[in-house]
Image (cartoon, rainbow over all chains, first blue to last red; front, side):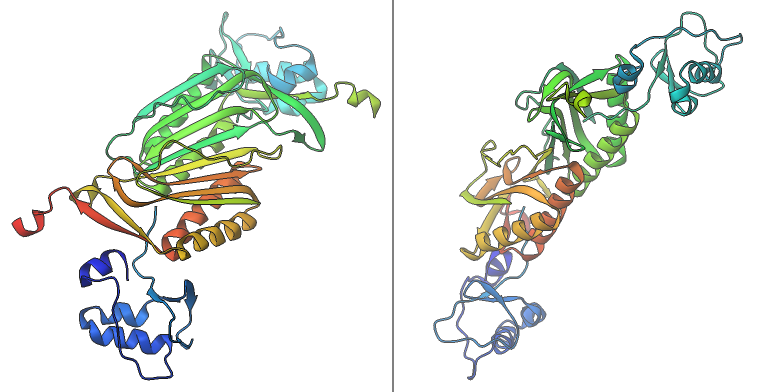
Length: 75
Length: 75
Length: 136
Length: 136
């Protein structure tokens, strides 16, 4: 997590328990439960796995880096 | 006259005889007769009197500078 | 809004724009027009620009003021060449300072449209081969 | 088409763009984003930019290539700050070389739209008065 979202939640990284097989959607669900005040954001968040945008059904493997690409805005 | 038009006609300035009272339209008609190959251009030309765009009915007085602002294109 | 208009002889050098960068400026757009070699299939050596002063400067200033006000620009600088500009050299530079990007881009687009339509500035091609016309 | 992407720490200095000016370039557009003091009525001291490398650079490059191809740009240079950029300083510079003005303006507009939507780049406000929030 990055930017104002990381600032708001007080952390850049978080560990969540997800039953296997692990998908992108399972990770966003778990994040939504962990941060209920931001549940909608996480449910709709765009997720990158190993630096590439991923789809909700994509599998997450051990060692993968999962990033929440939300609230962006360069420039 | 300026630019490629002046180049084509071989001159920047030209004298035309126009019956008084002299209007912008009378000048463009006279130019159209003088340069029949470019009659349409002169008939439809935008004319400036003393560095300001003028209307067809505007009067032209002795000593006024009349300019044909056509085929422009800066940049 | 601050407007500056400068006509100068020959190609424009590096930007000398001193467009005011106040605390409200969030976007600075610099557009440069460069003389291209190809003009309808024939090869240019350059363009010769003719102005009709003082009308040219007056019109550039008027259009900058109108376009700037319409798009809430904070400053517009216009620099344009007169005389000969060789291929590859800069003949026109527009600098727009605005609060945001959309205003700066829209102001630049509108300004150039109006300049090409209404400003007494003419370009006369200078061909690479002056004799080409006769050889055809 | 030639694409260059550079992320650098802190404010961007004067343009170091070496966007190739080939004989076909008739329009060079430089857009600079400047950090503004006012953000929703509160006063900023600056912005802190966060990137997520290598994805940030990869996405900037991909978008530049796609937008450049769509608008027939000849070269696109992207420079963006990471870390702290004070108010009044440049955090983003886009240089587009194209054959004509319309292509350059359209490419710049599209690029910035897509950057703001899809590129992992975050800005975190650094307020002028850190205590302001508590005082209200």
